[in-house]
Image (tube, rainbow, N blue to C red; front, side, top):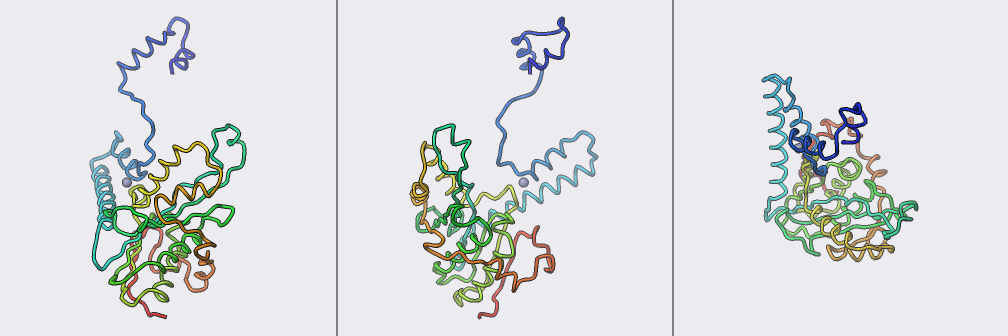
Length: 298
Ligand SMILES: [Zn+2]
């Protein structure tokens, strides 16, 4: 900034670095910090609009109301995630950020083609429950094996549902962030209905699908991801996918498509039975909760 300032000045008004620093530190209310990455864009937008100088009182009240509703909605979501009931089972799931292999302390890795490993994690229980290998289920594969799309996510969740003990459960609550590509889509909705009709035990009366407000969606799988990322950071060299699996298996029980369960083409099957969302009687994208009460069992 000092160089930029001097570049625009006549010889007589150029200043020294220390003088510039002194003025900058004492005459301006500006600070430096690393950008926060976990800030919700809606919160940010509303806060900035409220700060604007030319805002009328009426606009201000409108924005404040919008902000309060937004905050209340995110609180409502967290209370759903915290809720514990004898007759209810909660599953929350999400994808971890892709992990690129090989990881080596060598510049050349930046110029070579890396390949991705995926981790889709399902946690059974409320956000108050501890994380153990008995309630953390890690579904992992590489991009050389399967893509990372709605079919793979639905297949993993289907496997989990088929292997969960629903004794005494009347309500299944599924919590996932509203990422369209993976969690919130017709493929997933179809798979849940199919499982409900074909495989769910008779005592199960209701399925709830809960999608948090984007930006306020810290769910139990994120705690698992934080554990894993902390371990990965400490490792300098990681070349084999099996080494990645070993790290994952310290945080939960690991399953692999093709080996432990089938990767099914849910998308294709669903398109034969389900109308496209544009023809539904409600708008899918902004919907935060979907309920399905008992349906005719097949
Ligand atoms: Zn927000």
